[in-house]
Length: 426
Image 1 (cartoon, helix red, strand yellow):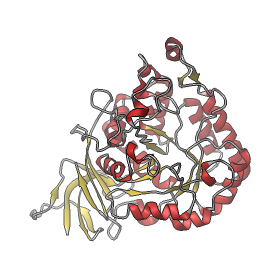
Image 2 (tube, rainbow, N blue to C red; image 1 turned 135 degrees about the vertical axis):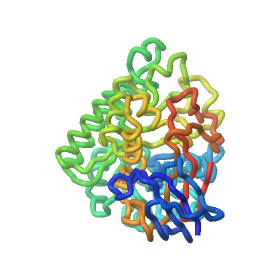
Image 3 (cartoon, helix red, strand yellow; image 1 turned 90 degrees about the vertical axis):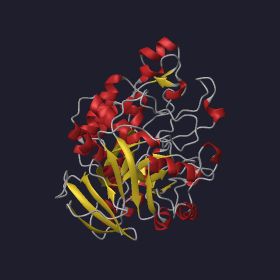
């Protein structure tokens, strides 16, 4: 039996929230949990009196390029980087090669990760081959272990989305739709604004996001079901989703930690490291997203971990593949961005819980045993400091691991994770 002594519990709604606790873990289960005692320490105890402990953080969107382009990252390397970042589960996108459109692909992913410290939340392809034509077999994929359905792309055919929302509704799982109309400004490579004009680059406006969000919400209102927008980047898009929530529609949304840290002005000088899709937006949009995280209006924040090969990264801005491999830095970057926005330490910690713990469990239809820390539940938790700072050297082998204390607002440090499959300590 291993004991974890005196970390403060980050678990809003729990009777011990904010208080030091002691946990004992044996065979991957929490065998006891209560207020911290002053009893003698045993050899092997983890004394964590300066730390916080919370239910394990979940990342709702990652791409380890496996199978298909394992050289960019690979599943094993990616899961190690995820554990470094404090994540106990991650959701790998289904747009691999081959894509995860068959139950056998979901089962293979679960089999490959069965012994990994960081587990997976399998995303199944919404359509066969992620081509936007024929729907995949929802019930068979759920039976295999799928937790949601996504082509990792905008859904082009309104009929496909309508049928998906209707067909998937009885499963209780969400349909993901990328909040971007790729045909409105197809040549855009960054946010349309003063910086794109100054650099002479074709822009992608917030209207491309709002157009697609409006269409999807209209379809959701007609068909019912559960709809999720993985990455929302604009204040206008967020407002439309919040209005739909107030009407009672079952819609959730997230954003990336990148969109909370930076703006389109950071692309000055053709900074290809910050080329993203959807792109970094204006300061006003970033601030609206930060406020939404603090208010609980955003359901989750994702790393959107997108590793690139050197050949994809070390090229001209116009052809560089968009994406950042920053899964190791999400927690400190999130706390830093919220602090930079004026949040108090308690406000930032409660917001972190909302978007890395509670929100993902809502989106991925967590079972009762997955929701929180309690005796008899699986031992799945994240240990971190809110005052000590520092990042581990990322285990990712991608060249686009951008986050450092110099490039990003940072606060806090991830110390480790514990799951039923073992533990990882930075």
